[in-house]
Length: 251
Ligand code: PGA
Image 1 (cartoon, rainbow, N blue to C red):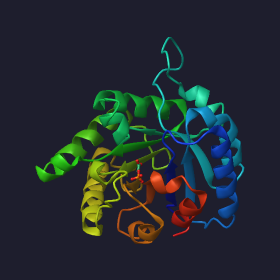
Image 2 (cartoon, rainbow, N blue to C red):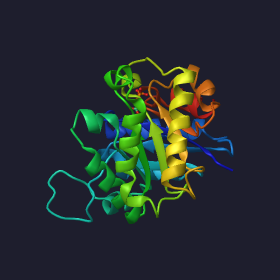
Image 3 (tube, rainbow, N blue to C red):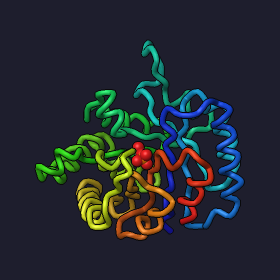
Image 4 (cartoon, rainbow, N blue to C red):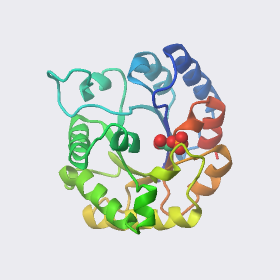
């Protein structure tokens, strides 16, 4: 059974105490996690040590990193290595989130290296892709998604599996704006991503989970996760409160 992956991205929010309190509340609200759902929470590095054990005590609930640097160790001031994160109970990581691409200036090549290094180190990777509003208006959606998928997956074409890799389609214009993509827009983008995955990874492409992200809320989650080729969600703002994220997980 392909489980839906319901992922929370807490971004640069919450003190350690707030993270611990939210994680505890979430685990208790998800007491009856349905068999077909998996939960992932990506908190800040500062609280990994305290929050990971709370999350991972619950079956089907995982902790992930929002970012890392693709090296085992070394002189990389301010960066964090996969091994350091895995030592805290972190099993997953995002790469290529739109804020890292557009605010922090990460390029396709670095994102591809992160996906390859993370998988090799034993992390389960979620490659985030998505077009800006300008690219959408210029009719470049497929071109952008193709470039981001080809470069993001370049180093893992023979190694990635449906177990170790997921892709999150997050149109940049829908992130944090309250402007969720409509069902037809999600269906079209996800069908395109599926076809690209099937051609890039002939064995695994049909099974790799494709998450939707961008203004997912308790009141639109049920519709989104029932669309074809939607295998979960990646949630920012609405994941910060345990109550609202648990409603999304159980939608
Ligand atoms: P949002 O963020 O749910 O606040 O739109 C999604 C994301 O950044 O992954």
